Amino acid sequence: MTSLIRHTTIDCTDAYRLAGFWAQVLDGTLAGDDLPGDPEATVTSTGGVLLFVTVPGAKAGKNRVHLDLQPQDRSRDEEVERLLTLGATLVADHRRADGAGWVTLADIEGNEFCVERSAAERAG
Image 1 (cartoon, one colour):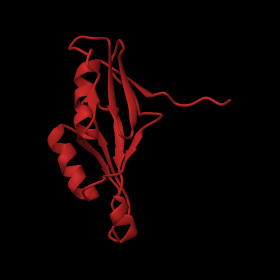
Image 2 (cartoon, rainbow, N blue to C red):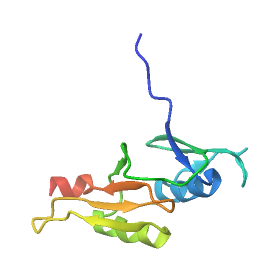
Image 3 (cartoon, helix red, strand yellow):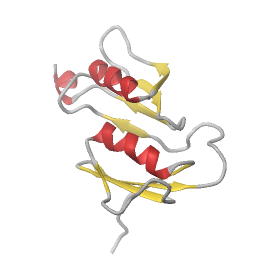
């Protein structure tokens, strides 16, 4: 039998705070026993489970692994605007004139992630 990915783990300086940000991004939920100050926090969403673990020291350098988000009920551009209002920051804009491309953002602790076109945008 092969292994399965149980969850994706993200090191951070404040597990509960960062998990709260990602719960909003993914319309997910924090585990019921996660509290401010806890060294770990879990977010469950329809796309999977993210585990946030508090580690000493801030992020240094570019992520070696990152998340690519695909909006389900809005356009890529609408999703980018929503995420910016939640506290994400723009890192790089790779949108092309033909509508293709993606936007690279950073979460509230500087972890990069990308927002791609929705399935409807890809089909259209």
